[in-house]
Image 1 (cartoon, rainbow, N blue to C red):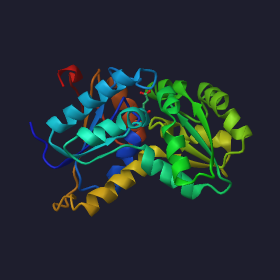
Image 2: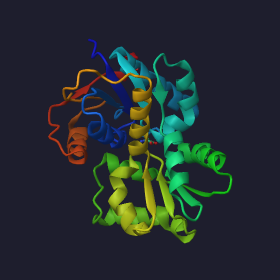
Image 3: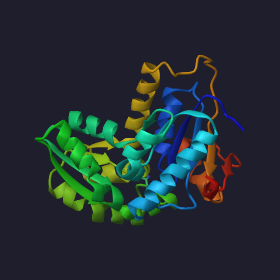
Image 4: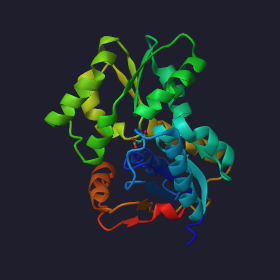
Length: 272
Ligand code: DGL
């Protein structure tokens, strides 16, 4: 079945919803088709080959829904498979690294930027390389935070939750000691922990949300390329996952502030 003129967004699970939230604000007349690979999350602990294979299957599923643009709302995919996707996809593509690095370089005042992401993202140094290309003077401090993904996928995200606070402190202490004034939330799952991270780092530290920045960048590209819908009626997003929708529906509903019960469809991603 074709969904027409939609924007396809994917992530390994719930994280890409940080981009969807912004798309729904910015472009209500655009149809968003979201795929969360909940059956195979996390990606960030896997090999490059596996991440690339998964990324192309995810993109293939979105193409089967006739999307006009693909957004990898996933730091891991953008870091490890971004160049290959950009080269091979038949529609415009964006990942999260470039738009997010660009904003961080503009926001920092002391030139010390922290980057948090999955092990694969941090291991690729994708953000660090991009940041230092944009401004060779900046100092970049990287920290892999793999447990953050599990916290988010399990809905343990409240700023007052003891477990959340402990894990945040464990991962963020070195960045705080190093005096960063800007932190890139380089995994799209992490904005769901934004309150807890901000409570620990303090309000003077700017948190740059990769999902938010990427949605804004994608909206700009669509506008520039004259690809926005001419029909201005509000469209409802469609959500697909590769495992049972139950957990996804409740956490996504909380995060997006809408009732998501019975609105998410399970698909078999191995067919793509
Ligand atoms: N949300 C993803 C990212 O931005 C992936 C988390 C994971 O699957 O490990 O990196």
